[in-house]
Length: 108
Image 1 (cartoon, rainbow, N blue to C red):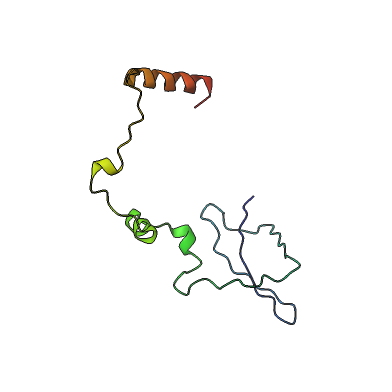
Image 2 (spheres, rainbow, N blue to C red):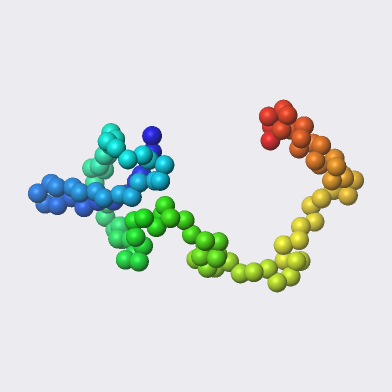
């Protein structure tokens, strides 16, 4: 079962038309669809931007497009992201062995 949430306009004569782009893993053919309508109109909702087509959600964006949309900047100094969290008394081999053990036990 898939859940797709959207908004729709009900006309004064009670007509409701919904056009959706389904996820790519929904096969063509007849499907049972359930529509749930809130009793109160959704006041204050803004329509989606005109440049955002209904299919954009399922198309996926490139890493560069996502970075630009989120304002991500390249790291200029390694010190900006360097962490000092590794215990000095623990070797990398200890860490790898612990993770392997957790995986065998179903913990990780």
